Amino acid sequence: MIFEHRTYTVAHGQMEDYLARYEAHGLPVQQKHLGRLLGFFVSEIGPLNQVVHIWVYDSLADRERRRAAMESDPDWTAFKKRNRGTFVAQDVKVMVGAPFCPNYV
Image 1 (cartoon, rainbow, N blue to C red):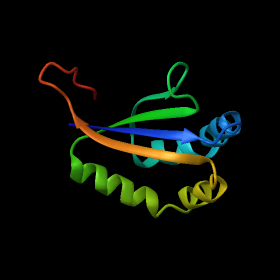
Image 2 (cartoon, rainbow, N blue to C red; image 1 turned 90 degrees about the vertical axis):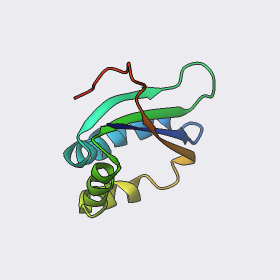
Image 3 (cartoon, rainbow, N blue to C red; image 1 turned 135 degrees about the horizontal axis):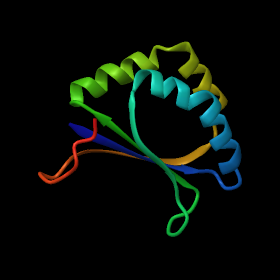
Image 4 (cartoon, helix red, strand yellow; image 1 turned 90 degrees about the horizontal axis):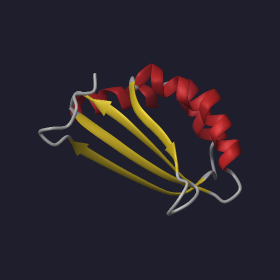
């Protein structure tokens, strides 16, 4: 099992619009293809204007297959076009759980 930790820095003043756009158009497509969203967070203290998604996959191959399917979905392409100019930075990490990490199904 792997965890994909995605951090996006949203342009100043665009967070409210981004969250509404993502909930309406991005999240449904991601849930359709990626499946297991462990959490979606907005920064409150520390670096501001950041959102963090954590997705759970069975393996890197599972992640690649699911993301490829999402990238070929016209609804995802439309969301990416609507979302242009929203982010000023992006960071993606793929992590594995420590031996005592809960098993997220």
